[in-house]
Length: 409
Picture (cartoon, rainbow, N blue to C red):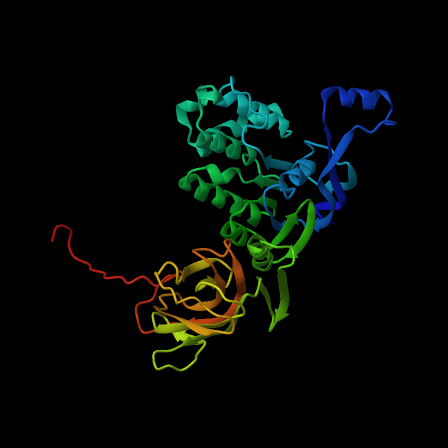
């Protein structure tokens, strides 16, 4: 049985031009309609299995937070239905359910009681809240004196004091300090290993790819993509880059991988190749071996010289390294329609052994959000194999000079 089920879920908000309009409409028993409808969410359906980790992404106003508020019961749906089995712990809007005049202890007790814990379990959980949050004597102070980061520490510690069946996190960790983000991520991973179902809303692609094996993409209140995080984020990036409604986003399966391509095609990439030092085209390199990435493209319209950029990603879709001609101060004279050009990037592949992909793009200025001509995700796959140097772990092969001697020598 699925842990979470949503069927045609929707939430409508009524907008009245005048406060009295609501009263008049109610008194008329809806015979007079004096409001405008705004659907924050509509027709959303999905199932989430027990123990599954799912990232929810989308632009601001896409309906992400509304969906979580529905699933946690803090607001009621206007249409459709949903079911959530088991205990739920949610970390939603910062400050939600917190009394600013109460101290940390009192707020923690009230929040734990709202999670359904009896008095004994509340008493047992409080020491963990203090220890994990590392708030120390600040637990005795009113929450109104807390910084944003301290509020996050308290809220997360309360929400995870007892392992829930479902953990829902809505971007709150983004405002915490780096140390607590790492600590919280480790706590979430421990819950995942124990079978907790995770719903995670964030704009951080790396966090979703690290914690989740599935992502849902919302846009204007509708669910438009459901699949592996890397493919869903590729489509999301193409949506962000698309400035005009008639710009095409193409996503197809090729050789067992999802390839996403978008842009106006005013300039179009024709080929992407990796060359070894001797000029031969290859897709397998040793750790730290020099290589040249070549991107050939053709302009379809007269334009200033476009920026050519690339991003190398690991097998999980996490960005490892990226750069472009704009950052390197390179510019060609203005292009005419039909011009064919090639950009070349010489680099040492200081990467750990594994599989990598190259995403390439043509755009203006420093980023593809300014004017996207052609964005090609996973245009090229290549392998890095162990070389002759010392062994190491990770995706970055940093030059290391090691020594060992007596202290003080």
